Length: 213
Image: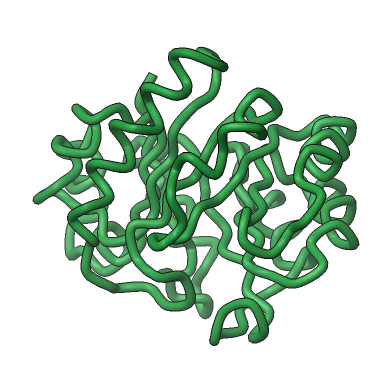
C-alpha cells in the first residue's frame, strides 16, 4: 500500500486543525511531524505537546521524525503523545538496535533515517530491527528544498537490501516530493511519501493529494 504523509512543517499553525482536517478529507494516509531541536539540524519546530494536540485533531496515524540529539530520552514522551511511527537518525544515535527495540516496546513502529550523504550499506547490521527506513532526499532542517536526484539510486539499493534481509520493512522518502517526481520514487520502491510544501502550499490541496494517489 502506498501512503501519502503530509508534513505539518509546511502547514499554517494559526489554523492547524483546519488544515489537517482538509488534507485528511483529501485522502491523506498519515500525518508527518518533523521534530527539530536546533542542534542536530539548524531549526527548531515543536515537541510532544503539539503532537498530542495533533492526535486530538485527527484519527490518522502520526509519523514522528526525530531530528534531535539524545532521541532515546524523548521517544517515550512522543509515544505517549500518540505517535504511531517514530524514526531516529543513523547519524547521531549510537546504539540503534537498542533504541529501535525501545521504540517497539512502546507499541510504536520504529524507523531509521538516513541523511542524503549517508550510504545505504550502513544499514546492513540494523535493517532487521527496522519497521521502516526514511531516506532524506534533502538535507534536513527546512521545508521547500529541491529533491536530490541520486536519492533514486539509494531507494533501489535499499529495496534490494530489504528484499534480502527484512521484506516487511517499508521505505519512506522525505524532501522535495511532489507531482513531478512522486511516480519516479514510487516506481523505485517507496511506500510512504512525505509531502510538505507540495501539499500545504497548494491552492487545491485535496486535488493534489488525489492526483498523487
